[in-house]
Length: 369
Ligand SMILES: *Cc1c(COP(=O)(O)O)cnc(C)c1O
Image (cartoon, rainbow, N blue to C red):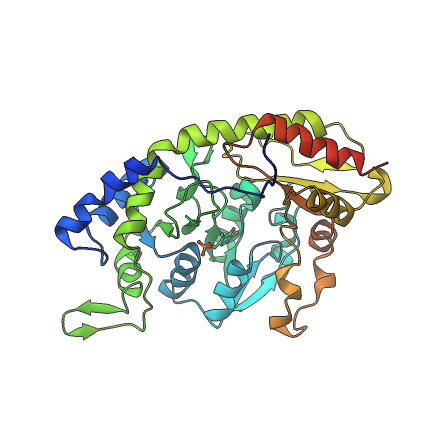
């Protein structure tokens, strides 16, 4: 058993493996601008994720932001506030208007029964989030998008490697954006990817991540710089070799939590989803103070006193950020507000020892006394 436990611990390959992987970079002096490591990771991910079209980015956020730009959208985007800042910021930074839909009380993804009433003649897209690895109601979102001719861009940052009915999660919607940040299930230190349906979008995305440069003497779009460099791609190549094993280890940790906390009154866990192979990215617990006998904040504090870092993730909701100066009415997303005040994600990473999980659960349960 170790002392301090953080909420996550980044996956890294054996040191020697990374050193071997970056050796070629010294020989070629090709450190960025879509070099051989970038190409290799791209093609390995295409296969691993089971998608047709994929491009790599410097991080997950730029993947989302440039996807929205590539689609040339205008107007309103229906999304949820129960997410990381990135989702909402990508919409706003594209001068689009986020319209916040409430979430499902069981799996915390967009409540599909509330989407249609938010659609106006300005709506151009839906941007749902596969929260904690819980997959959205894909069929229903698909039906609504077809009926109203809306684009669907999934924030798939939490769902690396997951499948739904045997298909890679990246194949759904018009695009799905992944994050390969150090804290995610699969990382390339920093990094991200977009999987997209329309092959014509590939060229636009490729140019947007390189300043909109179309040819040696032509710049045809106002792009950004969001190219994944060779050192990050090399880390991705190494981590990809181990990711299945890492997910298998996460599963053991998650199952131990479920066993120890699953039947506690006042602690609500996300039920496993049908037809989904989970990546066990996070272990969220929802704490109902009146039933459990202690609040989410009490549990958070008690864990912190014991050197254990849990995270109030996602709290606060993005529609309450001071950046937006009270522009959005949080009472329109009451379920999201309820959950965000009660949710806590517990430490979860592949090498977390079961003895530590036992200790964490013991501390959580003792908060009732
Ligand atoms: C991590 C994350 C992002 C952003 O990814 P970065 O790679 O950190 O830029 C976007 N959305 C969600 C839900 C995330 O968790």
